[in-house]
Image 1 (cartoon, rainbow, N blue to C red):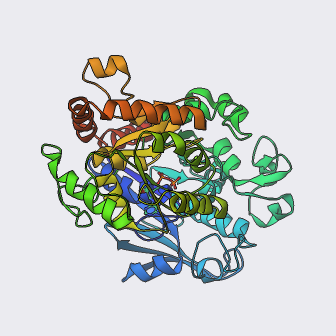
Image 2 (cartoon, protein in one colour):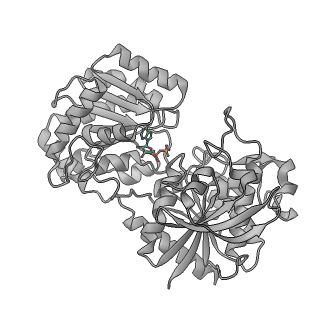
Image 3 (cartoon, rainbow, N blue to C red):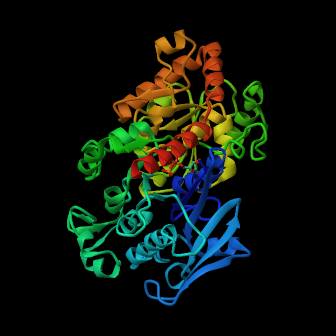
Length: 482
Ligand code: ADP
């Protein structure tokens, strides 16, 4: 049976992006098309989204939608079927979608994203004649009120809610409740009330028919007090209704055989040209150019979550092995300074580029021997998927999606010709240091290393499996709804 799904999110690559959420929302519709699922994506009308629309058809006008006039407009952009909530009083603001120019969140974020949730519910339940959907797929707290509005609307439409990162919860003061447009019964612990606040993520988790997150291991972890961020009780209560579906990569875009940002292109069958990328990376980063030096890379946000302090704490082990390190990222000032300091203290051995640079990121994935992902928690993670695709062995913390996507090359695995990278646990600097040592020992046996690299390059990191799982989940949800 062909399905029509309304996806609701605040980000969608390539139109508007601050994190991995955007990549998933942008890639999934194309991947689902092969499973007879037609996705329409509802987005806020940010300037970047409006600019990409071109011809847009007005579906419905509202004279006063959460404090100003608004329109639902339909258009195609970047190969996606979109409906945009064109509400200038809420979304016509430059820059980051959540932060005001001076930093700090926009004061009316609660209203802005209540409007998004309400628009999703209206659209899904027939507010626009001739436009219907079988189910709704809401992503993260910004779309958390969509399942809440849907629960109180008719006809009933089943809703899947996907958590991309439980750390971002969308909490607002209780005093905002009368302006949200939800019935009074929603203001309850059996609803969106969350420790004396209004919880948009909590609402999504409470009212959705099904919940998913972006890896099987993270789905299990968020049911524990250690990683549940206060919502583990609710999630445990929903038990079998929480699924973990690993993110994929757009393997057309992330393709080492065609990537123009690499110094040299290569294929899984013949990765020899990686050597030219390694040399280019060492040169561009100011590292000593030597093909035999084990080269570690890091690409990501320089934050506590990403374990950058652990990396700095384990640097002695890396240097002790005679290895090199190339860091690319931006983030917390103290960690940026830490990386700069490590580079200054170890010229030719450690390099840090502070900034966002897609070209350099690709060169690290395509030229480093190992990509480090020492995250304290990681719902899915894309860096390790990119590393596998580009033939760098991921060395990862044993958490979340990193567990599900990298196969540890332990002794038995190596003996069996298996393994695509290295895991470390517990997640601390000492164990990271020890695992850097383990990787260095494997590096000394190039035949084994080449085997692991071939395994990494052969890993299917595409959306194929996961798109099939989302399609099956939508159908299960519909079958349950009867
Ligand atoms: P996050 O928690 O930040 O979403 P992910 O691993 O899911 O982490 O996704 C991060 C993505 O952004 C990866 O594709 C990574 O390559 C990219 N990225 C992160 N920082 C940078 C940077 N400074 N320059 C280029 N790409 C970056």
